[in-house]
Image (cartoon, rainbow, N blue to C red):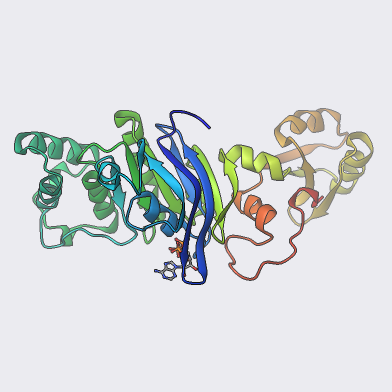
Amino acid sequence: MTDDAVVRATGLGKDYGARTAVDGVDLEVAPGQVFGFLGPNGAGKSTTIGMLCTVIRPTRGRAEVAGHDVLRSPDEVRQNIGLLFQESTLDADLTAVENLRFQAELYGLPRRHARTRIDTMLDLVDLADRRDDPVRLFSGGMCRRLEIARGLLHTPKVLFLDEPTTGLDAQTRVAIWEHLHRMREEAGLTVFLTTHHLSEAENCDRIAIIDRGGVVAEGPPAALKAVVGTDLVTLRTGDDQAALRAVRTRFGLDGDVGAEGLRIRAANGAHLVPRLCAELTVPVHSVVVTEPTLDEVFLHHTGRTIREPGPRTAGPAVGSRS
Ligand SMILES: Nc1ncnc2c1ncn2[C@@H]1O[C@H](COP(=O)(O)OP(=O)(O)OP(=O)(O)O)[C@@H](O)[C@H]1O
């Protein structure tokens, strides 16, 4: 255990009657990290975030946020966090600045400090020029940005976001991520978010994969992928069958030839490519190296893919597909 974790959960669990929504989650988030909680619908992400934010009372286990226990010191926890729910909670009839003023009053920010803080936050999320427009005129992405500004108004240590980009188009998603990273750089913020988007999880410094209430894997995305899978190297050559024979005999690797060309599974595809180019006697026209995906990580640990929630099956071992 690290001493400086800003979010820490130990055996955190929640039952709703006979249904276990979260089943003993252990996790630690270091200051300044963007930490992602990745899992399919119903995995227990929202319930976990709710417990960390003092909105849902845990059935068992403990959690601390910014050094405060969620059960014993909920007010201190709330002072130190910003929270964005899945659904927007902005008042559509108020302007951007009015929404922020309302929040400043809720948190008891002194008026002069609130004024400068509101200006700073509107600048940071690029909404300064829309400050006096009613929120009902805003796009989904602008609403999300305004909510981020609102969540950060009282200078929390941790920003919790439940599915921050759900319902937004790909371009807006990228913009929201740019803002989150900027907040982290400029405000030293810790970000804790839930997502079921694999591409979104790739943006995180660390992720915990949750399935059926429990964490099944935790670490930086690249490390999680490195554990489960091999890279896929796809080659176009002058003679793919001859190249495949050479790959088998000289490199001791297996592969197959299909419509996409020669496909080889290798532990470190990027290192293999120069050797292939140097040693194959047939001309190499193109090479593509594809790393394993987080979906494969999920499959490896749960036997299912994150895209297709359904009954657990005896899953194939991801590392042995060649
Ligand atoms: N208030 C509740 N009463 C009963 N069951 C609940 C309640 N809230 C959540 N659950 C159940 O707990 C489990 C976890 O739900 P949770 O909302 O935490 O999942 P999630 O991973 O956030 O999913 P989603 O991405 O769909 O929000 C689900 O089976 C859900 O039906």
